Amino acid sequence: MSLEGKTVILGVTGSIAAYKAPTLARKLQSRGAEVIVVMTEAGAKLVDPLTFRSLTGKPVLVRMFPPSTDWQIEHIALAEMADLFLVAPATANTIGKIAGGIADNLLTCAVMATRAPVLIAPAMNVDMYENPLVQANIGKLEKLGYRFVGPKVGTLATGIRGKGPLAEIDEIVAAAEQLLGEAS
Image (tube, rainbow, N blue to C red):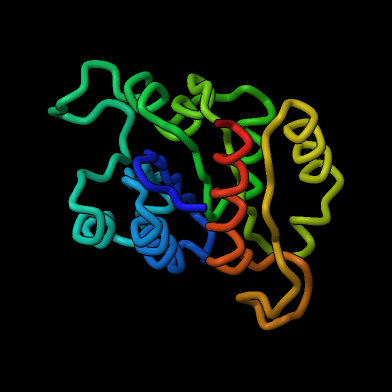
């Protein structure tokens, strides 16, 4: 299956795995998707938005109320244009905000407003991932129809091994294609 003609809103959060998101954006494009990147402010500290703008040829959205914009209400416009919302990497913080209905940044506002399927690829420290609160938030979102891919077991940024690293890029793309195929 291809992503031809689909618009994927790629949400990039403040996980150290954000460095893999440009490769993910390129892979989505190679499968035919139009990719629009929305970053949390923490994500934008890890990977410069210019990287995504250069790769996608599109503005990268970070702030809720930028000084000038083409859209009148950005989070609603994003929500309506999305065929798929993909949050990769997703931090415990962002997962918790979505599960709690907290819409205090552009990414979480747009996720709250979309009717498109949402795919979340967690990436965090193993102890954070296994925390009962994070697991409860993931369970709550799964019951609401949100989909998850990963994390995988591997070596974390701290050098320890455990479940927490971002799923492989090809696995995330395959999950996106599968979810969009189900939604059609």
